[in-house]
Length: 316
Image (cartoon, rainbow, N blue to C red; front, side, top):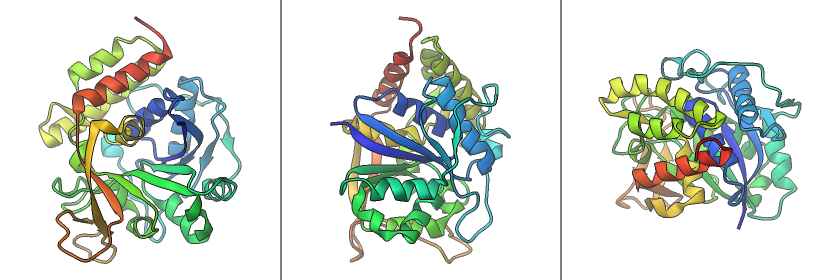
């Protein structure tokens, strides 16, 4: 079965690799469009970066829509200290040929869902949830069209990567996240607990680079830059490759293990704003709303990623 998806993202090197993985997986995924949101860098850069990935992968026909530039009610926090000033440091930036669609991303999401069959489209947010939360708030009727939401964000045992309590994507727009997590549709959540297990080690990057095609070269370049900050921060052998976990789960869910939980979003506390309260042991009576992914076969993940990037050609 080919699953219809919309990727909502804020590229970001790891978002960019997630797009490449989606492009290489036509047999499993039908990418209806890419929507960009302000996050890792401002919107004018995230939408350009998404279009650059379409160019590099020769997928210039993919619709790319710019969405919300700022969070629902808060100022935008960005992450240039991790991703660089371009958001995709590690490759040369150029003006892409892939056009930016005139339609706002939120309008695209709403219209695409309203025109779809019931429970037929999977939303794949890999950045702050502003576009998705805004679409749900503006037109709740879209929810019946959503098969599931497979997102990257949050943390439990890993704490936070931007504050002691909060992961970046949720922290940027906790109010939108709260809307999404209370929407009633199935959610599969890739938090730091699992993404910190998929490290872009030097050896894994070298295997990708050896594929010798434009997409693999771009991936290796971005991951080499991306690893600089996180290897020092976490004293690890490579940077966690967060966002592609969402696509890998859709393609090969057997690589992952998870548990049905309730997850609630903190929107009020100055101390723990953006915290994802994961009721892993069912100690409350809050209803299950998330399939919380907690472990992954990291070698299998990188085998999948490398094999899919090889589809873009290059060395045998």
